[in-house]
Image (cartoon, rainbow, N blue to C red; front, side, top):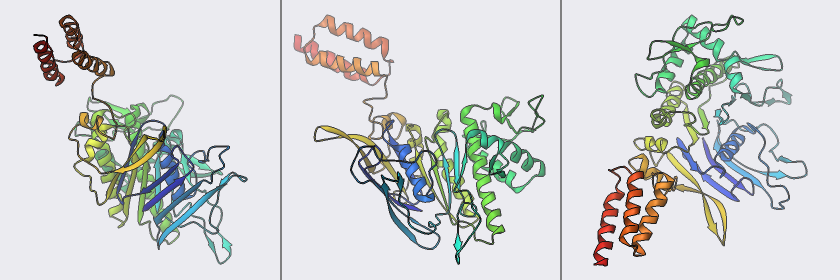
Length: 424
């Protein structure tokens, strides 16, 4: 599994050192502080390819930039440090083929996916003879996921629409696994993602399209699902497709299947309703481990999130021995702000409100910003000895903004009584 990731003078933080956990690694932090960047670098460290634009140090900086990493490969632990060659505008690499990290999947925030398969993307050089060129990785846009991916005239993937219908019509093991995964990624029995009957949806397109049997009695084509459900369906398909094709390719080449599955997910809660958010991370862990069990493989997950519900959902399963939480914050150093990445102890908060005000998100409260400002003004007014009329005006404004059961009312009553007593 990926054990260490270290960057210097590249990305938002001047230096980062991540000692990663073997099962689950969760990244939190404000927008623009580098969560996606760290996932991109993790993908590069494992596959030596970039899922998008390569990371480069800031132009004009004379400081040396480097990326170091270590992971358990098939036969040994691999460690390497790459430096950025400013003249060639590339990251240096070690001669020879890179080490094999296992099967690597990346669900990108733009809705696309990347897959690195050691049986199909891993070039080899045996006794001076190079095998035919293989794609360095498979990068899917969302349209590629639906309709298929071709590289140099060769069909890499038939796409979700064709594969799903084919698997369903032939009652293949892949369809059974897809059904199990979709059920595992669903929040409850009412909202369980159950395949319906394929249907044709276009006068000029003869293809049958998979459907989901909705609880209100309609089979809805997957292309018409909500954005969140489309992403869940795509993730389910990607897991089945990647693992099935890896096993087939390994058998074709007389190779042993991968013993590691590493899944990177950016903004795991993207587009999801809260009831999906509070189960999706544990569901992904369970699904990856269920895929790995049959082949005695290990599964590792790296996921970024902005959702307090995601962190709440992890509380029952978080294991300090196998899991880690990394928080990215702005920290003040010598009068200026820097980006700081810290592995924090995972302390259970109990509910979403407590997570919102924890170090993970750092909000003053779970209220609206306007309510926060009014509460601060109320406290300052009492401290400054405001007259009764001013306090009554503030109380009317509080009443228009806060519900009757807001806990601040107890504090306000105590402050108001104290101010009244002092005026007597």
